Length: 286
Image (cartoon, rainbow, N blue to C red; front, side, top):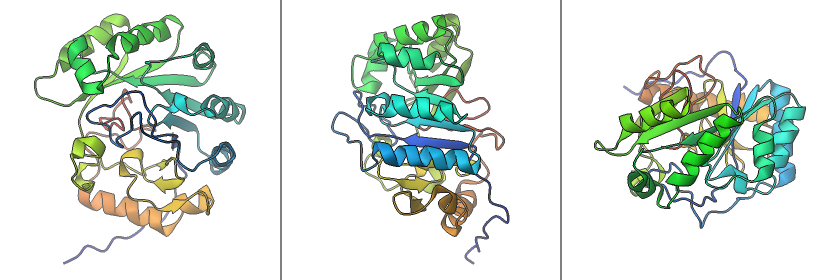
């Protein structure tokens, strides 16, 4: 018998909204959930589109936005979006690979209500670089240290892509550097990690869409960044409030619960679903 998916009786505005800004990235991580890389683009969302979305997010009660990608700092308007969101009273987290951080971005990272997040894979440079596809280890590690030295709140996620990966050693190294927010997750089979297979809803953590939503570089809204194929509307044509409160979002969330359950180690009260997020193993970089 096919399960009847009933939408929730109460619509919850997204406490956390991912602004999935771009598919451009200087890295080529083997597990990247959306296959971002050097050939990626910024999509169809303009500066005005993103500003409108941030306005609408503040209007529906969103408390925090996370800039992600790709490498979000590669979008020319990203820094302006951070400042604009702060002026509206939103908290902002920037999920960067920390390979290239300009002086302007360091200034933003040090502002009140701004935090950073990144991924780290191994204390062994060769292993880390093999996963990212570029010689990124030294820069990422140095910029984690710099961020901590500047007093920037920093979360770090370790994604396990193999059974032999030096995950525990990486964690100990991060702890020695002074990182206190560290989470480990497995590689989930989306994007490059899927190796050409279609998306499998069972790979989701189960907490997608619970007080969260994601907007892609083309304006498509989905329950989370890793469920981007489950578009429930597009902000080019429909308001954010109508999309997150609509039937399509409710049905998508119910479908995820039906297949993925109530969460793979995730905390339903947690506002984030990303590396370093307290109480959550769900990781949009996987």
